[in-house]
Length: 253
Image 1 (cartoon, rainbow, N blue to C red):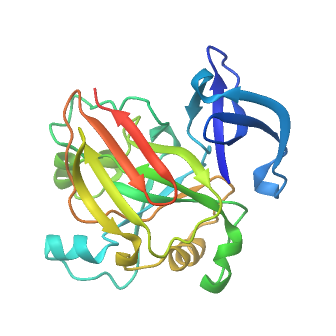
Image 2 (cartoon, rainbow, N blue to C red):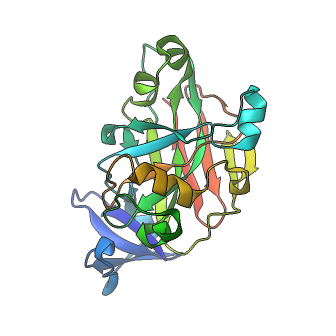
């Protein structure tokens, strides 16, 4: 099932819905309580604007979590997940522009599988974390690489407004263990890997993070990026595609 948040044409009211190929069915109830119920109200997809599919209190991202990316950088495999935070203000939706800040000259894409938390999660064993997941989405961990190198730590480089596109929806029925993940810039493939390359699995990540901080419904785990990260320039069209989910597309300005 594909869960979306959307607006109808020029309306400012966000709605929740169930996405089909040619229409969206308005949903009542709270998907985080397990009450996903469609109504008789439907809209053609060409009459809606998709929003970020969730409203996280935080985005917990993971650095250096693909074997091929670690090999590309010549870095050792981390024994524990390397986590950092992206603020909710960095989140933007499908089709929205990525805005390059004036203080950076090197903005880069990082295609990732995003995990959307479905219920409050605290100190959960890895064997149980599947029960705490609402679903999965595509995510672009946009990074000002020059500022990351300058600052050493990640906060400024990862936190600019629009630096966390998420979408286009949440896919609730998916096995995250072996999914093809690709990034394309202006139609050219730049990243092409699989979640089978993850050093720390989705379930292990959630367990680890939940022992550090409480995860709330709608929070997002950005599970890391594979090899092939690279620059974005004004006017570029960047696509993040995850098998079984779909394509997240944004332009750069």
